Each structure stands twice: as structure tokens, then as C-alpha cells.
Image (cartoon, rainbow, N blue to C red; front, side):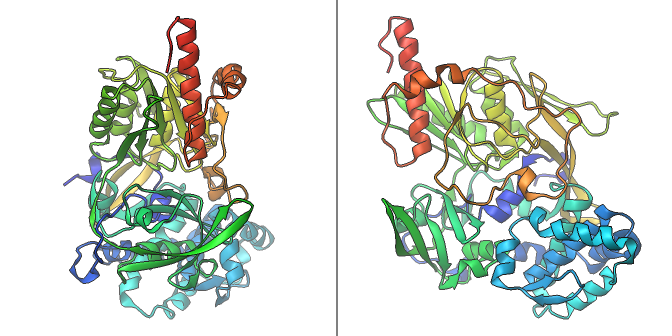
Length: 535
């Protein structure tokens, strides 16, 4: 058992639990999955077993707390609104609860957009708002039809309150859920092996795990999900979408998807069979046998991620790779020691990877060094996107900061904060993670809010979707006093030469194709300068 007082996380939990249903759980069994014979649980089940009580939520909803400032008011609105949404209700600005419409759902994809109108309400009325938050909660309780829902609703309200009153990454979580799901590098589960993000007009498939039920069904990255089990996705808010995807109520998941195929999109119906197996946090493969470029994909930084990454990296080197693509797209982060260790695989021993600085100036931060030995010293292209967050940004940013990689893709999420976990007051089954400070690279900058800018921009082909970065999602993300965007690399000096080289690897993933092209070009140019043939 991992005691929560020892936990240090660089993890985008909202991405893990809300935006990436099934992202860290894959399955390969060809037989139907029987939920009655499975010991896997959903988040509601974990909360039902936690020692949460109504007072834990109600104390935040006291009127003297909710009305003492604009920020507290917004925090209480966020709590009530989030609980109402789970009950398929809309918290209207007149203080009434109304049925949640399809249009409401489409407009309520982010905390920031949902709360914008409430700022005006407070500024117009101040402490004279015509309703009591405690009364609002009592009215919401009348709509609860399943007692097993109560703890999940209470936790939803508490975390939504903390997201505004404290910061977006301070939250409570069942200790068992952390130990059995979040911290594991290999998880036995009944999930489907794909990552999707709820967007306006449906849901976008961001990643499909190899050898997973989703992959065998024919689901592809870039597919837009229109229906789940016959339900229009636009009628599902984000939490409902996630729970339907990872729920255990059936052995099959039926999808209606739209796929861009040439000039005209096509609509297909797919069926995914649930199964149970292990999913690992690291994968690797050769891009093409004649290019000697390896692909190392890290899905999250969990226990033993570094050990597994080292094994995969050595395996690629034994196959004679001369260039590497490191894929950190849609990686929400994880354990800081694992991230520092993975970065060290590519750095000279003794290199300063990053350091932490506490919000409390009386506390001394930690410094993380590359402990070695360095496993790979060849050219690297690191893929990032808006889903690359926290510990993933540590690895990508440290390698860029120390001149070891070229970043390719999209600007990253922008979570440069870290959280420490401990037992939540008298609750033996609940961990509280609180933001303690920010991490900084060797040159003195943090990616908090600003994220990592790619040296070589490359879109995912999902333009027009809602941006889901730190600054887009949350009402009051933390802003460091010493915020700047960091030193920019010199990749632009070589960009035109490499892109114009005409060397291209054929891969269905256009970003991987561009990264492979970049690595091959850099290796070829280095070989030309040294009189060597390169790749």
C-alpha cells in the first residue's frame, strides 16, 4: 500500500478521469466480457465505499462562506451547477433548476465557459443574490433517486468547489482508486483501449491503443463519435459520456462514427467487445525497417514506467535505430520520480532535469538530476499536443531545455504545478491532493499556463474543436509571478532545409510522419557533415 503522505503527483487528473475514458485501460480478449464475474469497478463504486458524508460538502455551501467574495460565490455556483448537471438539471441564473437541454450540454464543456455569466450576476447583486446555496442543495437532494449516487454527487460538488476556491488541481479522490487505478503501470480492466474527448457535435477519438478491442473493431484516431449504444453523444455531458464508455453494464459498446475519407466523410457503425487483460504504460516499434527510426510511446508516468521505457529503448537500439520519435501526446503525467528517470535516459548523468519551488516561500524545493547511465544519445523528435500535461511536459520541456530534442506537434496543456497527497482530515479512505508549487527547468522557466511551444508545428487534423488547455478549461488557473515562455530553440534555422528535403516516412499518423521525417533529416545532415551515410 502506498501511504498518501508519500505521494507526489504531476498528474492532470481531470484529463485522466474526465477527458480520457479508457485511455489507460486496454483489452485483448476476443470473448465477451461478463461484468458479473469481474472485480473491476467504476469511480462511483469507489466513492460509494469511501467514508464521505454530507457535512463534508454542506460546510462549503454555508451562505456566509459563499457570499463573502466573488471567488467564493463562483466556487459555490460551480459546485451546485456540477451536481445539478449529474442529475440532468441546469442551474439557471434565477436560482431555479431546469431540465438540461441539448443546447445546454453543448455550451457547458468547460468550467470557464460555464461560469462566465455568473460573474455578471455577482457584480450586479453582490451579497444580495436572491437564493441560499444551502437551500439549493436541499432542493437538489429531492432529485436523487439512487442512494448509491450520493457519495459521487458529494465528491463532485466538493471538487468543483475546490477547483475555483483553491485551484483546478486541488481535489479529493478515493484512496483505493488512486492505489488500484491511477498509480498502476499495468491495470487489469474491462475497458476498451481508446481515448476520446467530448467536443461540440460529438466526441473526437484522440488515440487507439494497439491490440485493443477498439483497434480490432476498426476504430481509428480522428474518428468522430456520433452515437454510443444508440444515444446521441450531443445529449451526453462529459461525465455521462465517460461513464457510458467505461461502464460495465454490457459486454459490447456500439458506436456510430463519422470518418473523413477523402473529400467526403463516411458514416460507419462499429461494435467493440469488452475483454479483460493488462495494459502497459510504454510501447515501442520500428517505424520502417529501412529507416532505422524507432518510436517510443509513453502513455502515462506510473510505477515502473522508467524501467519499462529503458527496456523498450534498449530493444530499439539493439535493432540498430539511429533516430528516435518520443511520443508524449495525450499523456496526462503521473509520478515525478518516473518522469525524471525517463528524462535521464536521454541526458548526461548529472544534468539538472528540473527543480520545484513551493508557493510557501519558507519551504525548500527539490532538485532533480539525471542519475544515469544515459541509454540513448542520438537525435530525438518529441511529439506533444494539447493533451500532453504535467509530468509529460517535464520530460519534453527538460529535453528541449537541454538541447536534446526537437518538439513537434501542438502547444502542450500548460500544467506546471505539482500536488502533494495526504489523508483528508479524519477520512481514512480519502486522499486530498493539494497544489504546493511549480516546477522549473534548468534555464529558470515553468510551463504553467503557457505550455511548451513546438519547434515544428503539426496539427492533429481536428481543427475547429474546443481547445482544452489549462487556460481554456478553468476559471482561475494559478499564474506564477515569474511567468515567461522560456528560451526558444533553434529548430527554425533547420526547419526549411529538413522539410524541403523530400524525405518522408509513410505512416497513418501525420504527426508521427512529420517527426520521423525530421529525425531522418537531422541524422542525414549530421552524417553528411561527418562524411557518414546517415540513415
